[in-house]
View 1 (tube, each protein chain N blue to C red):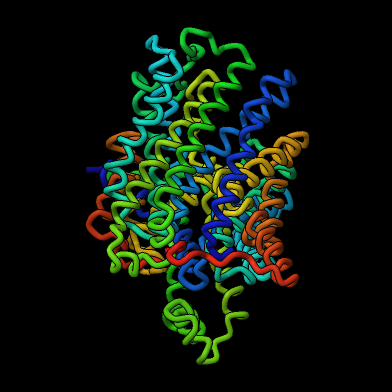
View 2 (view 1 turned 120 degrees about the vertical axis):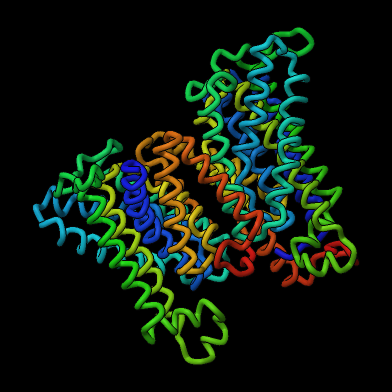
Amino acid sequence: MAPDRHRDFWLDLWGMALLLPLLAMPLLFKDPFILSLTYQFAIGVAASLSVYVMLRMGLLSFTVPAFMAVGGYAAAMLAKSGVTEIMALMLASFVLPMIFAVPLGLLVLKLKGLYFIFITFIFNEILQLIIFETPKLTGGSDGVVGVPAATFLGADLGVPWRQVFATVAVCLIASVIAFAASHRYRAEFTSIEENETLAESLGVAVWKYRMIGYIVSAGVAGLAGLALVNMLGTAHPSSFASWSVNNYIAYVFVGGRGTVLGVVVGSYLLIYMTNVFNAYAHLSAGLFGLLLIAVMMAAPGGVVGTAVKLFGGFRADKGDAPRPAPAGGAA
Amino acid sequence: MVTFVSAGVIGLSMGAQYALIAIGFTLIFGILGVVNFAHGGFYVLGGYLAFTLSHVLGVPFVAAIVLATIATAAIGYVVEIVLVEKYVVDHLATMLITLGFYQILITAIVVFYGAEPMDFSFPITGSLRSGGIFVPYSNLIVFVVCGAAIAAVYWLVYRTRYGIALRAMADDGPVARSQGIPPATMFPMAFAIATGLAGLTGALVTPMLALDPHVGEGVLLKAFVVVILGGMGSIPGAMLAAFIVGLTEAYASVYLGGSKGALVLFVLVLVILLVRPQGIFGTEARKA
């Protein structure tokens, strides 16, 4: 799917709009399955948007579970120490992963391509080992258990519908941050993705924008980690297993990596299908794999990317060609 | 001193296993540009096939290993043609397709064998004891077989016309094609060799370590570490790095304890990447 600033902006807005109904779900439904699906959607979208921000620069980052763990553990430890106000927890979960991202970024952002992929994957393993090696701080293999429910201006958010509402709200804020950053730096990110050397020669401070993207991605993942801990009431290493990043990456690619709408559609589709597949628990992972292969083979641009391509072709056949990209729009 | 030597021998044995796994992984990447997320799955498959042949069907252990290797290679050949071939230019798509295949493969194994570890044991027990040094025979046998397999791969890649063609494809695909080297033949064969190596390692090593459906994830991670250290697509680099990883892990496990050993290994990877971001023998990375 070729970049088109105007079209992509509207697709991104549609993606954000598709998130809004999640806020209404805990108010309208009490069915545990719907509430479970709602918070899974919200967390899945936020974590996938963390992958998406880096992909805007052509970097596939596998550090999402590690930053989710930093954000989640920070919130859990803070809540255990008596600070349960959700705004404070959000601040900690957002800022701490960003601080961690600075030295990590200095180390990994000079790597390219597959070296970047592998080293970011290894960081998840390092963090898991650190968690296991620091039982006094992180609870080790037991994790941080019995995390008290969050509060909002003194109101208890432990009631199921409020808990889901808070989770969705946290993820929505994370999504807005990812959306805002990817649009604020759209031209720079796209130029780095398309031709880094040319971008650099034209004066784009590639390293600076990569670092900005990495820090934002870390903060967004940290908020997704808080959302997960808020739902589970515990921060456990297995919740942030390295392998889980493959799910978030799959959401992005199955939906379409070029737009926020793609990320949202991919997350909704795969999370829903995973829940359907859970009825056949022992086959669930295989069916997920089958779906992944089917979508990647039938629609390599993802569901949204392929739909846009087909729709664009249809409009062109009708003589209603899509709007050309404005000069400089794709940098 | 005795502990030091014993750990060194075990480290060399582990290094040989890692080399066999990583050579296959880096061969696929070097020639096809594909990051095979199913590589650990082929290791698991090799283990289960060898288990079925030797412990269920009563086939002699050596024959079971050979048959498991051939079967894994054949499955790899088919996977390349059916799933990978058409999308080989899109590294990210093939990464996700192989990930999907890995999940299907592991699910199939869970359905047939269950999720619990199998009671798969090495047929030769006992240890070589000399001057206080203690080395299990199984480690020595694995070291010798892996060494022979590595030598065979080295001979194939560097001493045969087929190997020259493979390296030409890895160095410059378009020029190799213009010289009449057919990717339609080379790619599936390279994939089959690589998956066969993973299957061989699984068949040999799982009776010593463990055989359950999820051991492949750790194996894939180890392959990542080795190819990062050695340099993507470099077979000599993968060999050297595998032994560095094996020895580091063995010594760190003995002197520091299990998970601290792994931590030392990861720190070593970071240090090497700081000094030489493209790995020991690597060149500029492909864009993913």
